[in-house]
Length: 503
Ligand SMILES: [Zn+2]
Image: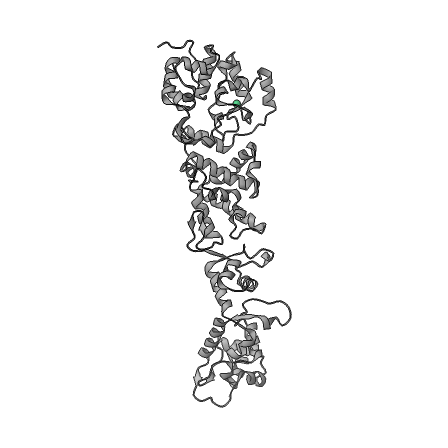
């Protein structure tokens, strides 16, 4: 077989198609197609990156095939390609568009008089995630789309600028650091490692999760994805990188930020789309690539641990088995309690902050155990007016018990007669009764001089409140209760003992 002469070495940063196009120009062929057919190669085979074609081309050009194969994006069918050790879907590739850095082309032109033989289409430019020249830190320029067959001369046809015109183009182009996501992909293709969490995913998953998290964090949850341009996606990748590069912890922190910002807007509840925006919608859509990577389980776990869920309902592909949190709304629904009343009890118990009064019940969250305890207390609540009968006490005694904190209302009512509207936990009422019965033992015979609480206040001139405090502090030694009776009315105290304690 005849070898082509002169020799044109493959460059380690270019695509095989770029090299073939340069060869065809160097050897005076009018088109890449005719050059390839001269060598018995079908152009489509070159575009599909078939190994036999690469070998054949290297053979006629006298080129070591290893570096060429290293840069070959090889079709695996089903819109998938392989590049080095990575599987790269077609959606990550730029196949029918001209992207370039004017300073790279200027360098090519200076090194070789004929742009057709000198200009190299960089492998990096064919990856959609690469938007900045890694060498010159210039935003890549995008030019007309064209059919693949015409692509061989695209750097000539679509970039007519030479010399100073290329410099002027560079002067008018945005300068920026390459995005860390772009650098990650290029490093990964070069075999470098880290961050671990991203390395554990396919390259597509790593890029996509970073961009989807970033697009929501950079532009908000209501952004129309169709309105995000290339620079927007570049910014999304940079934003998402700050979180995904920190692995699971970083992603968890990003979820926290999104939830907190939704809360400020008064959004959340079981409407996860308002919290996580397109990140959530993306995970809902099976699309042609149902495997989104570990992000799906991470977000599902986050929602289960930190948000209101509906048991039995499907959440990101699996039904919810149990809940960890309630919203005020879901707790009220489950228990059949009045939302606003329940909310007052939760505020009283510091489970809901009082300064969140303008927030809807659907986004105020409470821990499941504490929430259920509060709801149960409300379900067995008794009204203030029932307390005298339950405690067998006068109304002033009941009022003093509340003032002393021995009985606490489930919530504080506003306005007139507020005490009358307050509910009390029946279990707490029972506890007060038990304490009282415990500290005042039954007496078969009440000795003379032992009188009721009300009598004590009058005869010893001591306020009821003080007297009750002494009783519950177990200061009284001579205290008892009528046999077979319970409650405050059955209580008898030795007057001298009261005087002794008071002196
Ligand atoms: Zn460049």
